[in-house]
Image (cartoon, rainbow, N blue to C red):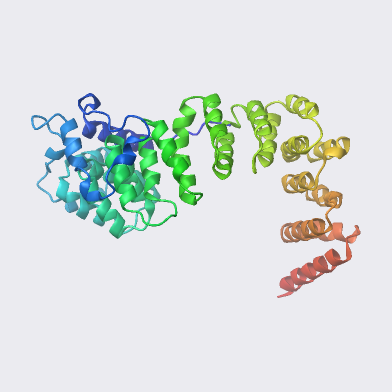
Length: 429
């Protein structure tokens, strides 16, 4: 798989965000660590009023009043921030816009952010400006996270803003960010604010981020938090990441982690991924073994066949064959059929279904002809109806010719004949 090259503008935006965070955080050596292990944050007062202003923390870390720290930002232009914001909408060149945006955000004073954020959001935010939006929220979080979170929680339903602010806040003052997140969530369901916190501390305190994650109940938010932690885990190496996943005691969380880690390692290490999935079965690991063998087949078909052949009879062996069949069917459907014939004892209904979907585009006649291999009658008839209807819509002449020359189950024939009649009626109209 070819690596994706990020657009220059996106690289600059990401780099600019890093520059803003580094500039405004100041020297970490001047600020004592906010946590020492994974438990200190739990001893904080739950009320947001008891949190020391993070702007004060950021100001201390910026080097005091002698330098232009985060609390010393002043607008350097005679134009108002909203006027400059409007002017930048007309900047077409992405490099110029990024440079000007960085200068603009860096020049905003603490009391100017709310009006700028509101104006920025007023007409909607196109996907290409999300980096600018993230930079703006991050800069506000470095100056006054309490004001930024107050605005976001009251005015913005989309969780992106709050999570971005909390991630920046947690990056330099995790205790206060955690305390705010806990104090501003009610009920026993997952705390959506904790997603941003975990993303913000994932690289600097992996243990604390992990402990916060496992405290979350099963939910979409926990999955998002896991996505935020995963890059930090993978930075340790694949083996340590897999060890972390295996240590999880919550089955649902472990299952989600297995899926995400396997997806990340599939292309680079298909054999190791297959071994890990088979050795650590979960609810979804079986279905992912075929993905690992698919990737293995694309790299070296013989190696994939050797791997499959050494497995004992059972689900892992059938899942492995499915991956090989899927990869082969996309390139050579006839060879895939030959493999199913040669290894019929490992051909399950799911192997057949996957063969049909992977071969249908290149050889619909061969794909449909093999639906009869399905042993489950309902699955077989449903597959016939779906594939033939699709074929009729794309190549009606070939589909009708095949139907007229092959015996189909009675109920399938009725459905197909109705589809043909409807198609012919549409042509008349």
